[in-house]
Length: 422
Image (cartoon, rainbow, N blue to C red; front, side, top):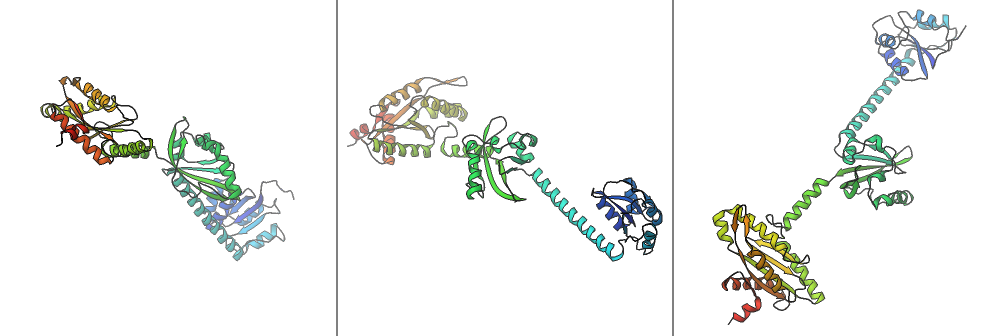
């Protein structure tokens, strides 16, 4: 008898119902087995249809199928037809060959169905997991112990500007700026040797990352470890927080700066004054506090409207910023009132006050409307006039009112108020 050469161990299936169909499906996926024939008295049986689609000989009678397999004496025969006479037919063609049938095949079939169900559930779970990873808004990056990128989901592609195929196998350091880039390998090695890490288990740590175009941006990072096949992997969940940081910066700015002029507001002015007084005590120098109230602002606001008044205040603020040093402060504390902190101001306060009056004397062009304003300024000096912050401000305010009473568009010191007090 000549044995035909085939790939995989030869198998004959008798019975192409649900069990035979499931058995055939499993064998089609395994290159260790080759189904050389299948038989069933029902030409419309599931297994028969599947066999025909895959080019496997299909027969209406088991005897015909057995004859077709006579050149494969090592063929395994599975009888799922519930016909016990099949064993006799097999013995005629393959003397002494045992047929897998009855409870044995039923148990085998049940095992196959359980495996198929388990496989289906695993494939479903894997599909669901991949769908989640693919559609999640946060970037998911997986690296191995060498720091090489193994996984890079679409959200990570969008965040960093790289495609997955561009970064696969690359060291994750390409996503980092210095000095984190140079320190990364040491961090991984230290963790693998000692188990100590500053990142693992820390949720939402804020770091700086680098996009493909070289742009650095703030990123929120959470890192965890997983072990697969005795290999360590690290999974990073990343989120671009650029918009959040901009919003936080804007909120913080609004909390400390005047919305109209972008000068420091009253709260920030008080903080800066307190800081300046502390430095002055330590370094033994003087600090001047100036209180400015515009002369003629109300008339412009009433006649030309609030829009013109707002524009005037903005232009006044621009001029006032040019009258002081970078180390000094000008703030808008309300309406048309402005305050100044002049550091190391021994003999400097009168000079700045004159500059303020001079710059305000120049006409203002408010969209074609030429306007004029002036300024009355009060000055108090630390530590000559007072020590407490609140007292210095009150003294400068009182000196400003004396300047207004003295004809406006001038400045007065707190000592001028003292000399007039009975």
